Structure formats: C-alpha cells, structure tokens
Image 1 (tube, protein in one colour):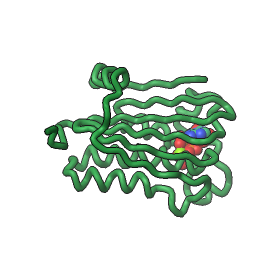
Image 2 (tube, rainbow, N blue to C red):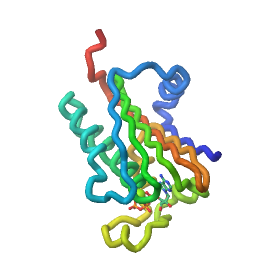
Image 3 (cartoon, helix red, strand yellow):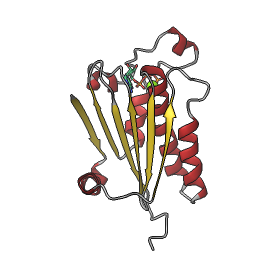
Image 4 (cartoon, rainbow, N blue to C red):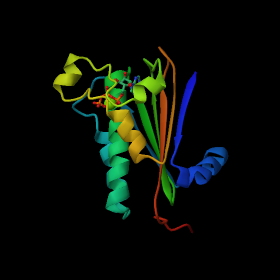
Length: 170
Ligand SMILES: Nc1ncnc2c1ncn2[C@@H]1O[C@H](COP(=O)(O)OP(=O)(O)OP(=O)(O)O)[C@@H](O)[C@H]1O
Ligand SMILES: [Mg+2]
C-alpha cells in the first residue's frame, strides 16, 4: 500500500495533532458517488460548499475547498468503481475523506504530475483528462493524503484550515 502525504508547512503541526487525536467533528455529512455518473457528479462538493457558505466562510477559502472537493469527487466518478465522500466539519478546518471501491493507483507520484491522465475518450469528450485534478487538489489543500495501490480501493483525504473559528464552541 503506497501512501502519499503533502503538508502545507504552515499548518503541519496543527494537522499532525489532528491526525493523531482524531477528535469528534461538530457535524458530518456523507454522500455516495456513483461510477461514471457524470450528470450528478459534483453534487456532494456543491453541498459541502453551500453549508460552509451559509456558515459564513470567507469566499477565498470556500473556493479552495470547492475546487479540491470537486476534483476529488470527479476522480471517484471517472476512475473508480464508485465510492463515497464524508465531510467532517470542525470549528477551524474541514476534513474531507473520499473512499472508493477501486481500481486503484499504480504509481501515486506519477499520477500527481501535471498532465498525467488515464482518462478515456468519453471523459475527454466531456472535457476531463487534462491531468490537472490531483495537482489542483494539492494546490488548494493544506493536507493531502492518498493511500492506494493497483486494483485496490483508494482513500484520499483533504484538510483545509480556516483563518478564523467558524462555529460557536459552546
Ligand atoms: N480515485 C482514483 N482511483 C484511481 N485512479 C485515480 C483516482 N484519482 C486519480 N486517479 C488517476 O490519476 C490520474 C490523474 O488524475 P487527475 O485528476 O490529476 O487527472 P484526470 O482526472 O485524468 O484529468 P482532469 O482531472 O484534469 O480532468 C487519473 O487519470 C487516474 O489515472
Ligand atoms: Mg481528475
């Protein structure tokens, strides 16, 4: 099982503390993601964005979360046998976990390179396949963790910190 980790240096310590303690989130939502359902793919990331927008999150951070979550959701739709996303809401960050049922990633470093894509002709006709999804997720996230291997499920988790506490902590 190969593991890929990226930490935005500024948040590394905070992220490691969270990953070690794994405290209970304030709320959690989860959605199924259906294989090859390009009509509905994007619904989960839109919903996550809407919740945070209603809660008053700053547009710049909202945009980063929306992009990272959308790219990861489309990847589950496009490159796997389906899966699910779980978004864990905390006062000062969001933790989003995508888990799928395969087909897995042979070489995660290679798949992270801008321009690398195994997208088929159907996906390319829909405008996907530039090989920029994973690089974009990394660019917009404070933590990116991908755990995968060929012909096995993939787990991709993202953490994005807010610049202020969003929710009342009573
Ligand atoms: N969850 C996943 N399971 C299996 N393979 C994946 C998964 N996510 C990404 N990949 C592999 O990594 C490659 C690169 O992903 P990336 O999102 O960067 O590009 P893309 O999806 O091919 O194109 P784009 O996102 O630009 O439309 C994919 O082509 C695919 O081979
Ligand atoms: Mg992609």
